Length: 329
Image (cartoon, rainbow, N blue to C red; front, top):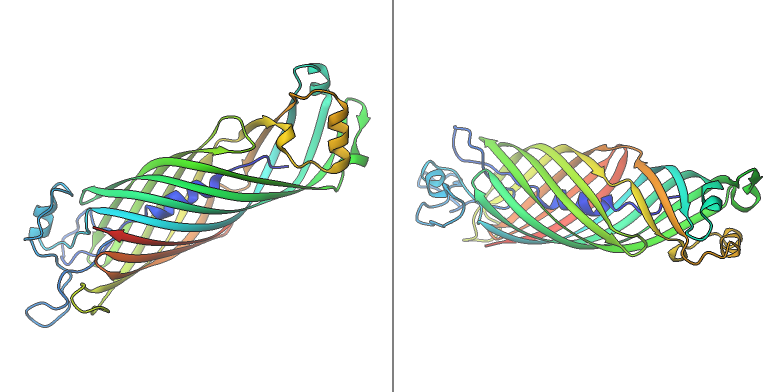
């Protein structure tokens, strides 16, 4: 029985922060964002040119003028994006306990065993970011999510009294929704058209069925390659396509407490709980992710210097689909 685990929100957060790009230089530089585009379409020799004119001086990123002077193409320093994430993964419930202020001994004796739990969720997220240095992007996040967890209960007992007739093989469905907020950073580096990034973010999420916050740490390394084409839109900079592969690690709060009246319990068990006569009864659940790591592949199309589209798919241990539209200025 899964009483909520909002890793889908923080997963979205890390995807939103993806940043990297191509530098038109033979020298490596920690920089270059997935949120950028080339300057002019052609150089004086008639070939594709991804450099940004040095005259486009900006306060941010710090050391940006020096990087541009050396021939590196930097993104617009500020970004705003909207994204959608659909995620599915397995949860392992270690313990389902109860807190009963009026009947503490009964609470200790009541045991429930959970079977297979599968969680599904959809998340919508807004992100604001800025390149502080050519190699460092910082960002803030705000989002909303809703989801469902489905569990087949394995049984239970009240002291020596078995409750399998009430619980065993019964489906349990939990609907939840909430808001999340947090912050993170992305380190990025490139050599010619190859790039690598390291993203880390920390978020807190409030769910309608829980007391307190869910805290999550997400780490996402990625490596990829960028293709540069002539502009799709004249005068808007070169069109760029980045493709990458990577992995994602999630470390999330795994103990949840809340009022049991907010749960959609199986009918027979709901009657049993009501008969205990404790209106302040709460659940206390300990659980963990079936897998902390999963693999990802993704792509980003930079339509113009100021607009790009990102998509990423997660697989192996965790299934996810992510899409985002971003404006840079």
